[in-house]
Image (cartoon, rainbow, N blue to C red; front, top):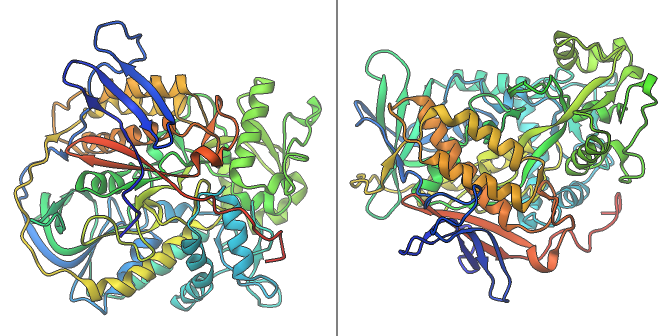
Length: 610
């Protein structure tokens, strides 16, 4: 099963019975103690102190199911991870059902620009890919998971090609490979120039449509898991926006659920993620008894097009592959004497790992007082832009910037969460019959910072691993028991305030004061009960559940590591914080446990010598 259960323990919300409330504290067996805030309950606390004991919904308030159906395996999500699992399982179980929140191509896979990383080049090796992944992960990767990723990755990509994915090739007919941040080899396979995710999604959907035995329910939000007497999966409730017998809330009775629902980008005001990325799968799993690990490691992509201070929601990504082809960052326009500021920061300069580049951009923004930096790719020329990055070119021009002749304004924005539902190497979670794969999962591959273009590969590899074991351990049919978890729902009206709180206080740059303020504000927002049951309130409840867990873990990790940047603890500290923060929930009350683990990026061979 995923992870051990020994470790130092923290409780995000403890009611002492006398009005005192302790928040986000950890008491280590070695005498260390970190506490983000304590409210004594006597009125002496300032406005940043939590107002009341935080109790989140143990399950979502929802109407009783009005329809039912059955499937051996329910897959929640329709990106590369979910559809790969479906295609692999369809011939091994009687019935596979895919549930997607809107339509099959609406998830994050569709938006992946750069490509998919694998050791496919004649001079590349899985061992070199492994080293680059471990270095990017800043000591928090699981070595066994990384080894599985890089050794099984090449065959997984070849399987995509056999499925009909049209990757780009060079003039000699060989697979065209490029380089992105943190990689020491050209190992990024791409399609349509900068439309890799869209092409992979097209090929997978075509295969799904050619497999009539796979049932698909679109426009369906997964609400909560149905659990049996042993705490294992016996089904899932869905809310379907449709017509006929499957409209409104229903129940799918099943023997296993595979979460492939993506990330949590909508926790923040600006993100590269689509609107469907509201952390639903993580929240569902947490409420059902699964563990969330490493949530504090949220990757902020360094080069997201800056559209102004009031821009909200999904923002245009400027792929790292643009820098891989020679673009570079500058701190001002040419007429203002702009200079390249990544040189001297890292050996790879503008192609350093994402956390390094994002921090360098933020530091230069703070030093200059500017709201963004610039990406200079003018020297690539019009023909190259049109052939290699047609999607990005069209996007930037639609926003009034022509990168052939102008610099692109860029700033970091939420892109990917490296943590998620804790799994073992075969996707199993703490809940019997519940599996997770892709961004919703924490397989251990990414550690504290994901290496560029490893995300699509993770979805492929670990969905294949799930499909290899799940049929042989499929649980018998079981009936759900009465759900004793406390139902609740947070008002959808607070979603904007939640996102502003997370962006301003739990974003790229974090501190104890900001995190304490965030915790207090989240506690207050969690108390705003919904007046009606609707999808916005369901999503907002999921967002605040995940936001609270993320903020608690971020407050406790008193160091800077990978994508977690603490202004008040600017250095990495392996002696105190090498390890993982795990979040669990019991009927709406979360606990955070620290599990020490050796750093996994020590004693690595140098670049190119693996």
